[in-house]
Image 1 (cartoon, rainbow, N blue to C red):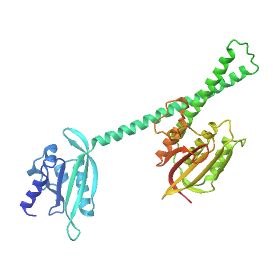
Image 2 (image 1 turned 90 degrees about the vertical axis):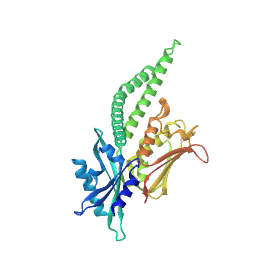
Image 3 (image 1 turned 30 degrees about the horizontal axis):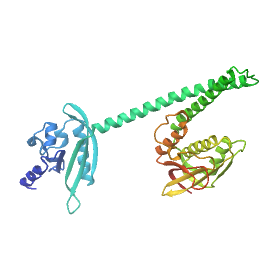
Amino acid sequence: MSPSAYDEIQAVIEHIDTAVFILELNESDEPTYVALNAFIRKRGKLSLSDSIGKTAKQLYPGKFGEMAYRYHCECFASGQAASYDLTAAIGGDELRVRTSLAPNLNSDGAVVRVVGTANIVEAEYLIREAQENTLALNAEIEHIIGLSAHDLRSPMRNMSQLTDLLLDGFVDLGDGKLALVNMLKLVSSATQSLIGNIVDFTQTSKAAESVERFQLLTVCREIFSILDPADNHRFDCDHVVLFGDKIATQITLRNLIDNAIKHNADKKIHVSVSAGAIADNVFEVVVSDDGQGLRNPEDLFSQKPPTKIDSGYGLYAVSRLIRSRGGQISASQKATGSGVEVRFSLPGRVE
C-alpha cells in the first residue's frame, strides 16, 4: 500500500476506544506493525514512529513479545482467526490481556495483513479464581460436615435405643415422665433423620461421573430390594438399556424412591419407573407413585438450599447433581389419580 493508504488506516483506528493494531509481513516475511492506535500507545507508553515497522518481540522485549510474535506468525501461516491470552506489564501491573487476530486474505487466499484487537481480561481471571476458591472451600466445608454428621450417627442411634428401653414396661404414673421420654424419642428420631440427610447430601455431592451402558431394570431391582426388603410396596420398571451417567441415575432413583416410601409410610404404594429419549443424546427417566401426593411438588427441587429440617437435603443434593451433569429435574402432581410424578433428564441415549 502507498504511504497515504497507511495514514488513512491509522486515522481510522486512531481514536477507537480499545486496542487495535494492524500487521503486515516485511521483506523478511516477519509480521510487523504497520498501524496501532492511541489506546495501545498510551498504555504501553509507545510512540508511533518508534513502533511502526517493528515486530512484537522487538516492541515488547521479554516473554510477552516472544509469545505474541509466535501467534502473529502462526496467523499469517494458517490464514485462520486466532485468540490468545498473555500476561503483560501495563501501568506497573501484571495484567492478563486477550488478543484476537483476524487475517485479511487476497483473491488468491493469501494473507495480506492481520487486524488485531486486545482487551484486558484480568477481572475475568480474578472472578474465575474466586469461583474456584469458593468451590474448593465449599467442598472442604461439606467434607467436614459429612464427617461430623457421620460421627454423630452412632450416639444418636444409641439415644434412640435407650428411649426404647425406657419405654419398655414403663408405667405411667401421671407425673409427665412418659411424655418427656416420648419427646426425647421424637427428638432423637428427627435428629437421626437430619443427620442421615446431611450424610446423603455430602455423599451425593461428591459422586463421580460414570458414563456407561446399563440396564435400568437391573438398577431399579437393586434399589427396590434395599429400600423395601419385605416387599410391602409394588414396583415396576421399564426394561430398557440406557447409555449415560449410571451413578447419577442410580443416586437419583434411590433418593426419589426412598422419598416416596418415607412420605407414604402408612400406605402400600405403587412406584413406577420408565425411561425414553426426549432429544438427540438426552434421555429422561420418570418416577411416579400413587401416594398421598404433595401440596407444592413444583418446589420439590428448588435450586436454593433447604432452610427447614424436614425440607430434604437429599432431594436438594439430587437436584444439584442432575443440573451439574447437564440435566434437568422437576416434579408435578400426576395427571390422573393421586401421587407425584418426577422427571429427570441426563445426557445420553436409549439403546
